[in-house]
Image 1 (tube, rainbow, N blue to C red):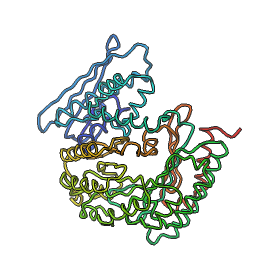
Image 2 (cartoon, rainbow, N blue to C red; image 1 turned 120 degrees about the vertical axis):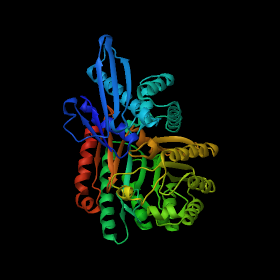
Image 3 (cartoon, rainbow, N blue to C red; image 1 turned 180 degrees about the vertical axis):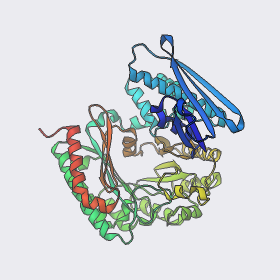
Image 4 (cartoon, rainbow, N blue to C red; image 1 turned 90 degrees about the vertical axis):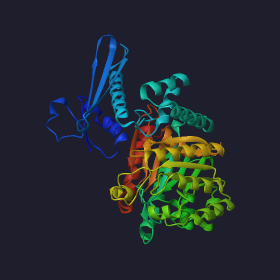
Length: 510
């Protein structure tokens, strides 16, 4: 399907395209100026977007959606008043929002689909609410801004407020952690690669040489970054071992890695939380659990995704449902007292009945936290590559929404509270991923990474650093190579580059 957006505001092309894709995921969207509407191929739908500024600071935006084959037209308009004292940047923000309003309205009219997140297409909605509260707005006024400027519905705003309240309960000094850092350590190996995955993850079988070389580079990064932090007295708030699957490596390799953590990072005994993703149950052994116990690490993830064996086979998770349950109890008996489990709504072949079955099986285990993901068709995943050939058939929007409501009902019934939220591009139903936890068992790292309140230093293959300037709050990113050989050949260079950025952010030693 080809959709042309006719407008003079080409600077907003990406935002306009993102809103259209909320309704038509696979549409080809072209933004053209009025002078060039006849220069392109014939479109299936044309949407004209315009605005004008009139006297008294009034701003008027309008949209007209035409579907020639159906001989139908839909229109929308929006008027708002800008303050005389506002600078050009603020006025441009009003222009952008007004045009997004009318674009959303005509698409909702045509499709009959109401977007509960309004014109928001970013992945961290709760950042908006945190920002408003930090600026001194009351909850009432912050909520009004979300409704009126971004068209977010009341249900989603209530969810956002619940999450913000829990985050500030768990981390009362959340807004004051800009002078500390957290650490993400990426282990890029898995037993197999799941069909929906685009993380740096390589089949560990037969790659032991790459694993050894990689771990040597990772230890080097940890030592050098740790030394820099120690010399400047910068504390580490949390550490998160992700991947890939960090428990893919051997128990001996895990032991040496955690020893490096404690010897390299400053004030290691004061780190508030250390998490190890043990997401693939087929990587968990008594020996590895003993190593976690040795280093007092009791927050891990054991991720079933689904409790339907056929689904696990389709998506490439080479473990059984029974193995997930067995490894959960093995971890519990070994002293793991804060276990997270991930579930995915909308996996191929699954509907509300299968998801209810997954929740019923989860009820037998009652992990401390539960992250409910909505399936996203990520661009480079195996699932996306075969989306059009019928290999991976997924539920429709209404059933996806029913599954999300069931997750909300089930978690509330069993005493879980939502504590973090994020969204993704091409997520089914334009919904969200929500982390739930028994109160007091929330993951601090998940809060920090989502709300972008402090620098996260990424170490390891494919690990991305997210730099948050302590003075301005400006955010930038820096990523290590995703491929193990490229990482092994260049880890010294990337370590040096990260230290140079840290010196710019936090200042050199006096």
